[in-house]
Length: 255
Image (cartoon, rainbow, N blue to C red):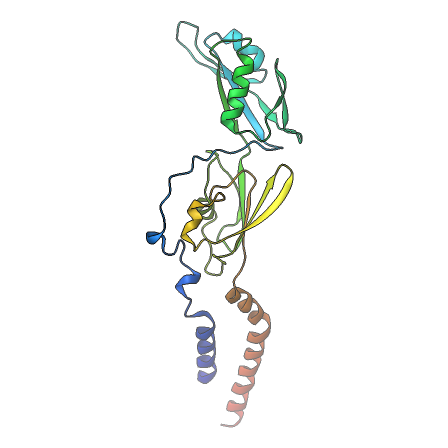
């Protein structure tokens, strides 16, 4: 029995030990990598996005036709009677348009939030002066699957997230995750595309894919160690257990 136990320990040690640092460490050699300026990232509006668009003016009555949703509250004070805050959400259709009160059909798909803000502001200026436009994407989410500690979908409230931040939300990759071959699934204008990313490469921080967009999916594949351990579990280990039992039985009978 002692020999059998030693054999199992030795087998497991050979299988799971001596993991190279290059298979585990992120951003390898980043101290020697070229520095770059921070990317001023802003999400692009896509089909099926739900937009919150609020129009505020010093005269609450002037903003009412553009805020035909449920009233969230109303500010107080000010010579103009305060700034009225109301809320309405708009679903971006497959053709990238929304139906906005008074203004009618607006093409917002493919625009950034700043561009949509400018579009709405310029159109409203024909009716109301000095309007303040507040826009948010209400269903900005990303999904992280595969070899992470807490896979799932995550709603991003600030509409800005990097790949490392997404991995952190999912509890980081396990030691069995392929850090050099992360799969990114992204949909642009109704067309899904895939890309492989290397988190061990320090240049990943300069990649245009470093910032995720709404509905992006990250999939972390298992490495060979995980695949091998999965195969060993139901097959080889079962055989070893049977062999160990047989050896133990023989030793007991021959005493």
